[in-house]
Image (cartoon, rainbow, N blue to C red):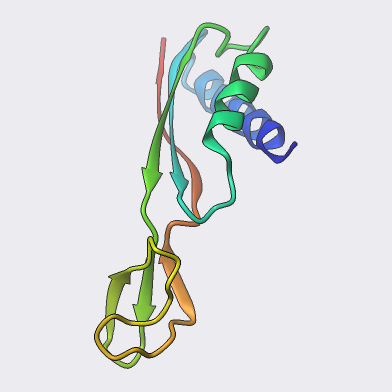
Length: 113
C-alpha cells in the first residue's frame, strides 16, 4: 500500500526534525495532498492510525489539506484550473504539458513539545 510508505516516511521525517529541536512529542502533523497525486486520503488516514503507534506521533492528529490542480499554458503564459482533468487551456484550447500544482505530497507543518 503506497499510503503506508508515505506515512512511514512522513513520521520518520517529523521525528527527526522534532528530535533536532529537542522535542519529545509530536501533537499534530499537517500535510498537503495534491488532488492529482494518486494518494487516497482515506487510506492515508487509516495508515496514519496504524503507523503512528509507538512513535513520537502516537497521540498526534493528522490534518490534511487538499491542493487543487493547476496547469500552465505556455501559449497564454498563465496558470489555469484543471480540476476537471481537462488539460486544455480554457482560453486558447492549447493542451498543457506542465502541471504546476496538485501532484504534491508534503509535510507542511507540525506541532511538537
